Structure formats: C-alpha cells, structure tokens
Length: 165
Length: 393
Image (cartoon, rainbow over all chains, first blue to last red; front, side):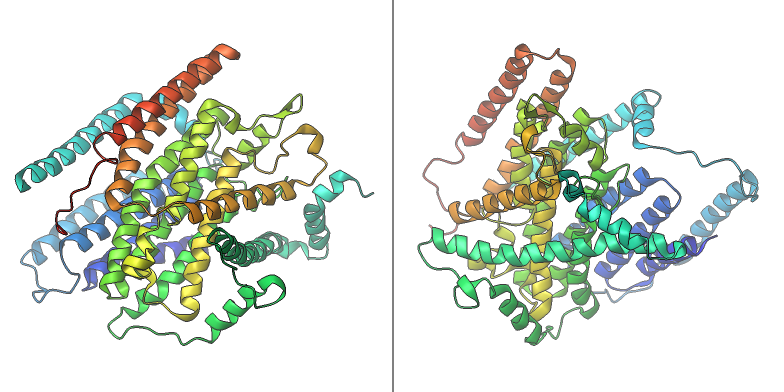
C-alpha cells in the first residue's frame, strides 16, 4: 500500500463513481475515461507495462472515442428529465451480489501476507511467445469472432444504403 | 580530450557532471528533471522556427513574401506572435462547458509532450528506454483524439462540433495504417523498444547503413506511415477538420488567446513526434547515412532528418489541394489499409527468404503489383469522371 497505489486507486474510484453519478452523458464518458486511465496506471505501477499501454490504447483510444462518437451521432448530451430509473433497486442488488461474490473469491483465494518471491518480469517478448504458442487457439477464436462482428456491422450498414435508394 | 566521441556524448557527459553535485537522495528526481527540461525547451523552440519557415516557404511557393517585418528577415515573428497571444483576451462562450473547455488544450499539450519520453534523439539520449516504447507512443498519441473531442463538444458551436467529428473520423481511420505500417519494423527488429530499433539500424555494410527504408517493405511502410502521419496531424491535404474555408477552424474555433496557441503548439508537437517516430522506425534514428560520416554528432543527424521531413510537410502543404470527405475515407480504407496488410505479408516473406537479389525481386514484385492493383481499384469509377452533384444541381 504505497502512496502511488493509493493515489491511483483514488483516481480510478473517483472516475468510475463520477461516471455513474453525473447527469451529463458526455461528462460520464469523460470521467469513465479517467477511471480507465487510472486502471492503466495501476497496471503499470504493478509492473505490467504491456497490459497498461494496451489498456490505454484500447479503452482510451478506441472504446471511449467510440462511445463519444455514438453520443455525437445519435442524441444531444443534455440531461434527461426522468432521473429515476425503474431498475434502480434491482440494479443495486445485482451490483451488491456481484461485489460480494468477487470479494468472497478474492478473500478465500489469497492470503494477505507479502510475498517474498521476486516479481515475475513479463516482458513483451514473453507475452508474444505465450500468445503465439500456448494460447494460439483462443487468439484465433477471438480473431474469428471479431471478424464476424466486423462483417455483421458492414452488412447492417450496406443494407441501410440499399434501402435509402 | 575533445574527440568526436566526446562531442557526440557532450550532453550525456554534461548530465553526469551536473548529477555529481546533487546529493544521492535526490539523484533520481534530478536525473529525470535534467533529461526532461532540454526536451521541453528544444521542441517548442523547433516549433517557433518551424512556424517562420512554414510561412516563409509557403509564401515563396505562392509568389509572395512571407513575414518580413519582425526582426531580420522576419525571424522574430514567433516572438511577436507569442506576445500577441499572451496579451489577447481569453474568450469563453457563455454556454460552453467551462471545465471541459479548459481541460482540452491542457490535455492535448500533455499528450503531445508525453510521447517524447520514448524518442531517442541521439546516442544514449532518450528519456526512458521502455520495453514497449512503440506501444507507449501510440497509446499516448491516441489521447489526442479525446482532447479534440473535448474541444469540439465543449464549445457548443456547430462548426466546432462538425470539425471534431471530422477530425475524430479521420484520426481513427488513419491510425490503423499508421500502426500497421510500423508493425513491419517491429517484426524485423523483434523488439518494441525504440532504442533497440535504432541500435539495430546504426550498423554498416561497407559504407551503407542498415536502415529499414532500404528494403521494399520498409520503403512502402515509410510512405504509408508518412501519409498517415500527415492525416493524423490534420495537415494539408488532409486538413478537412480545420478547413478554414468551410468550417473556419474546426474544433478550436471558440478558442482565443493562449489557449489557441496551445492547440497550435500541440498540433505541431504531434507532427514532430510522428516525424521523429518515422525517423526512428525507418530512417535509422540518430545514425549517420554513411559510415564515414559518423564523426558528426548523432543529435545533429536526428534534428537534420527531422527538419528534412518538416520541409517535406511544408512542401506538400503548399502543393496539394484538400481532399473531399469520401476521397479521404476511400483512400484510408480501400488503399492504405490493404496495402499495409500486404506489406506485413511481404515483410514476412522477406524474413524467411535467404538474403540476395532473389529476395529483392520477389518482395519488390509483391509490393509493386499490390500498389498498382489497389490504386486501379481506387480509381475505378471513382475519381476521374464528371461528377453529378446531388444537392447543388
């Protein structure tokens, strides 16, 4: 529990909490991005450089931009009048249940004694070799899945063009 | 005492000499500050020089004098510009989102400066040698898009929103070929560290260097990278996001005074950074072009190459007209993306064939044929025929 860790954890928690509570949709996306950046910095702080940079590249560079783009294309970011959602109570219950399960899993899985073993140095080389040898099948399956999603998106877009004519 | 080696390493020696006077406890912080401050000074200075060079060069191309009033030959123009933007009123639109409006220029400058952390500007002269340096560069570079959106959205102006939408669409489209073009170098070097990539290129066969641009895939990769870099930095012919004649200044229309100057600075710093990355990946970084020229210090070579690329940018800006939106997207998705994918394949073929002229023939054939076929596909019933205007006729 160093100062860096506490600081980064605070950034992450504040960012994600603001993403849930703010009224303006664009503010929500921006604070969610702050939370994601905090998470990436936590990864880097823990020595996982590659994961941290990929987190920034994917979530800040792609996912946040996509969300922002969707908001710009579809509707205004003005806060709507009805702030109370009918799913408030059930949503909170589900969130609590998920949190409880995760906390239980973490508490039963680890002992909180500081490990004396040296930190495993996961270099980019090792990650690449692992992806290409041991985990090559999951990688290919994800590739196929993403290609299918891409083709599906293209098909939807093409159909609209044809209908417009 | 004063040998070529010492002059080459003079900044490194200077840093160690300065560190000697700092107590051991503060040395990590002092070392970081001494490394960062020169970069924070050198590149804004380069920005100031570039603005003058650009305006004078463009003026020369358009048969007029550039700025020639402030100082000798107008070279103090950036000073005058700086004083002007500092003394101007900072206007914020009444309906603007104040916090986001304020954060956007700050974020763009931070992101633009952060990427310099991994760029080697000379032998042993890099702020941090990250294991995944190239990835860091692209990850931080993608934060610029977010600040562009923040600027465009928070201004509450339709022109700035239009400009932001155009800018983001363009930046997303051209980021793909930018990253894919650099993958070939990562494949060849077997490393994501910028320092390793440059060190591998800084060796010589006879007098010839081992730069990656001197291979078929390297040449194509460099061209793709530079075109995508032009689009990423929103420069002509890809300046639709800030087309002065259509949407006035795009996403930063509602900024005035020094915030506008910060956007300007961020944009130019981004351009320098991508050029420096192109130099690192394809043009051998700080390495001399011939083995008998290595007595010239490495940082001179780096900045010389950087200035040459900047001159290329200015030249292109003075020469080419602006693209239309559909041309822009077609070019990115139907030409650049397939070509960069084929280029990765060509680099793989190159890697597994024995060195020699046959390798050159095969890989060169793949690359040239794909270039020709893709450009024919792009031309077909798209570019050269009488256009019918749907709304204007």
